[in-house]
Amino acid sequence: MGMFGATELVREIGNSVDKIFTSDDERLSKEIAKDRLYVLLAEKQISLNENDGKNSNIFISGWRPAIGWICAIAFLYQYLLVPIMASFGTELSLINLEELHTLLFGMLGFGVFRTVEKMKHK
Image 1 (cartoon, rainbow, N blue to C red):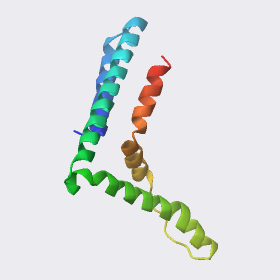
Image 2 (image 1 turned 90 degrees about the vertical axis):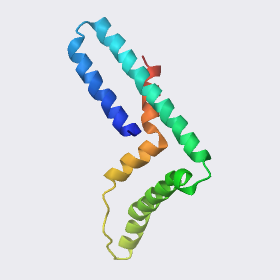
Image 3 (image 1 turned 120 degrees about the vertical axis):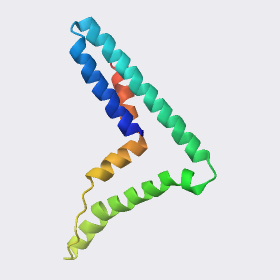
Image 4 (image 1 turned 45 degrees about the horizontal axis):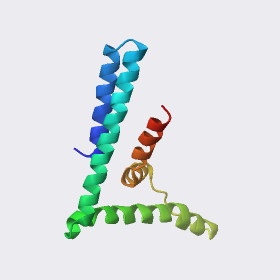
């Protein structure tokens, strides 16, 4: 199970636990436990990513750069090439970047930053 599946699982478990705990103290302790679990999952994912990056096998260490370049090319196309070509009267098709945003943000670890930010403000 990847980071996205684990995060979704934690969210579902947290929602189920919400139904059990009723007092503010119980909810607060549950929120702290859930946040710690998110941080633990993020740390494990970071460790896995570091180990993958150290591997000499291109099919293990090269997947992240390959996906990164695909995202970069798609963003260059969408935000640079399409407007430039439009200024010359040539219309190019736009691509749906919603899935690429999710992929790129996950690769860059923005989910981790949000979790850490939430932990600091409690």
